[in-house]
Image 1: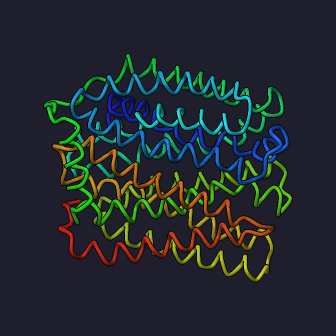
Image 2: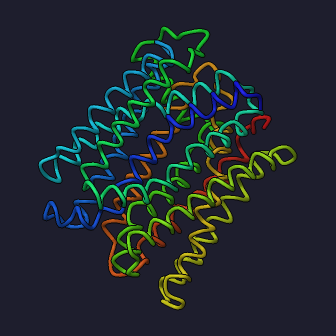
Length: 395
């Protein structure tokens, strides 16, 4: 990878990192938010679910916009919205207002997710997409490592409001980088209107080449966000981790995902992406089953849950880039819409799995493990059911 391409990947990865930063940085303050707003755990968790819903809806909107008006203009608008919504979160008067502003924050931040994936499809041949996406995962994956620790430090010094101010500053930095360093990559703009975009969305939903990989990839993401949604409650409230200890745990799991994504880029030189994807999803599902058994039995305490959790989350470093690349590969002329639909499926499923884990959350890790197990087993089943009938792209 030459210097210019490496710089482009870093810039794109930082923009995508808005999502995990916005999700992970305020996780250590969840228990404190309950006290501050006099809200229950489900209400605090709803501020995360509303963000997932905003990401899902926002990507549906930006998909056709990026195919029609280019990649840069929707990106710059979305980042601007993200900045103002982040500042609004810092001033939220109650938990309901915070959830609403988090929705707007996600609407803005979702632009970066759609645009960067579409730019990758614009610039690279199908066989190179998974490797570039793996490199971007390494950049954006630094965010979950640093975010909980940074969020914990900010909470201790300036309160939860300071976390959202920092997110606004990061968004402003991404806006500046995008304006100066990311050129337009769309060569031929689509002139389709709203009706045409809706038609293509439905065509993709009915296309086995797309759904064979996008839907299992979405379920795998659902497992990860079930973990993200309740991890702070499980490890801080149930297993009595300190915020700093929880931050280290969260960071180690994120590091596993990053390392796996980089190993994925190496493995893809000799192994087809579809084969890597099947193996990774199977390992993740089996690890989740083991975690559920440990949580149900109570044997081994926190370490017995953490070990399979580490494996399950790390496996997503293989699943995410490969499922995305395989789903988008046949649709170069609809890259924006395909990218949007992938993201929407991921975060719609994430909203449901996160809300379900939060609703079921009790004085154990059982709810988290059960939802992760369900998502993992469904992902493997869908991949086995749909992928053999789909024409596998040359990856």
